[in-house]
Length: 349
Image (cartoon, rainbow, N blue to C red):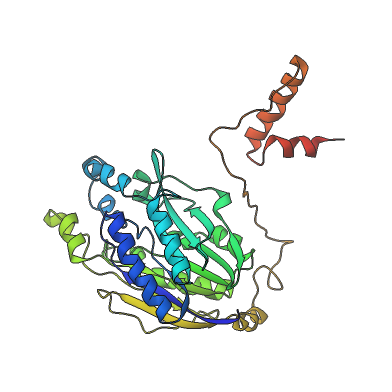
């Protein structure tokens, strides 16, 4: 499909209530579909809401939120996850969601991508949680970089300040991305910090579109009055966050904005008609992984191997084989690239 309509969500979650978040999301998914969108995207950690408290108080104070947030985070394959997949299928729409993912005892900033039949295309984790996020969330790995062939073109996803990582962006460009989802939480926290505001971070999405010659869908959350009332308990906290912060947008492959923005404290959907053929024109000017590159001067090393916490060694049949396996597998752990089988095959002969 060369031309079709897409939508991005600018809305507040039902804070730290994942079932209610899914209820609200299904209504937005239905509306996007009825208005003709083939793809709709939600913001970073919209399920069950971005944990703004981590920026407002010391970690010791925030322990009061941990259990509730943990229990309201999505587990891949759980009922809330399945309801989102079912909504994508019911309304025949591709769906990108940002979520706090629970994996037993740890949480991760995740993005899930479903096709219009409700099939999971990708479940990825933010490569590196940002600053105070690291008091709550773990890291992804190189296996969470992916661009996927779909009926809507080659689609990829990144979160928030992953768009400030030049090497991560180049890794995505090298996969020939056509439609990119850039998920943002909202821009109402720390008004004293320009780098956390809408102007700079929308510029990151815009530059991503121009650098990668791709469409960028940039959904953005909103801090609701209800969220503010729960989060802010002191005058000091009131200076650090405000209601609103929405700045959703969609960018064309030349970096141009495609939508009139919503007011920063209003909820709604933004729509745009995209034409994948326009990417060809943009690429004719600058393709950073093709004719406008110099791999003889600079190139990227990318490790997309899953980084398992435990690797089981192959069972040895003799003491001699056991020592060989131990030696080889120790080396594979040291170099960090690939399982033992790859090391063995590279050493053959």
